[in-house]
Image (cartoon, rainbow over all chains, first blue to last red; front, top):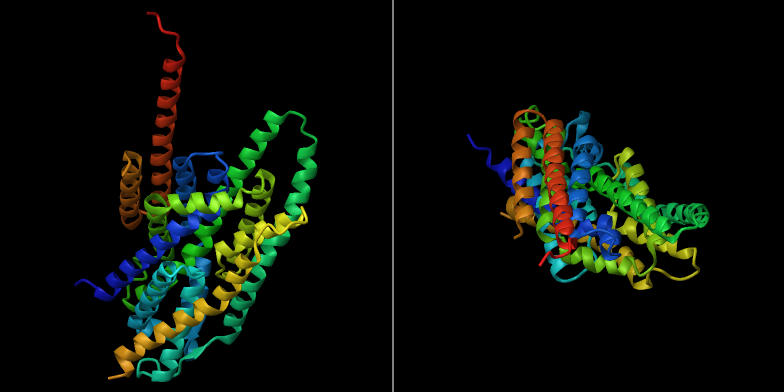
Length: 342
Length: 59
């Protein structure tokens, strides 16, 4: 028999992954494409290869935190696994909010939408107290850690980018030939682009597919749908987004970033990628867009200029508050309408 | 849509089928090998065309 709940979760999960791919490709490949170092085709190729690698090898860490660490029941029971329909509503709400915010051009982060939706699902369960999960609580310690990580993410990326810029500038100064210098810089920018793509695979894919692990657990198919297979599914969804819709965003963001220079772009990307990857090791979901903005700001500080406008930093602050609140509210309202309002 | 994009999408589809039936790691290895093979062939073709274009005309 077809498991319709799982099928629906896969469709919505694919949409969220596709949307992330079309927007986040610019964070990894904006610098080399915007700077004319590689073609769009090569950028797409590198992005796909490394996102898939990161998704299959390491995305399970973030999946575990988001899917099973935020909403908890007594004796280690995950209430979302008991009632997977609510996990589907949470995933659907995150997808709807991402689409609405993109259409309205509001500052958006898929990561923060999903966390908000999971919190909304937890609030809904603790409000409704269904028979299958009567004692649902939100793990405030984990939510606090994630919130702290969101604030630290752009600052960490800025710090790493600042350090990288200093080291790179010193090392590259000794290279006399301009041609050799350009070649080295090009290779460095492409390599850090690949590392950023890998980090996005480990963190963003894990976050986008976390609720799938819950639905899979609820439908009793966790032996077949292993975390690695779910990671592959998420990586493929993101890759389809990169192939079909990333071109315009990549060019626009890339131009904005490369108004600086190749060394700054390289430092910004390395700072962002390292920060995202470090948070992945702790299983904490963070936004790649906010990491790259932090990276550019950090590398720009070296020059004593404001590389990133106050408007962009303000948008991050709005995204921290608006996105999770809206996604949580939407999940709660849809769930209440379906299960509580009748 | 360009031909290479359609080809990439097909590789991803086959890769997912491999992931479901054999192993996700083998699926990634398949996608890597397929895409890199296409890119190497494309590079070789571009190189050949460039050489052809740079040859002086005999007429």
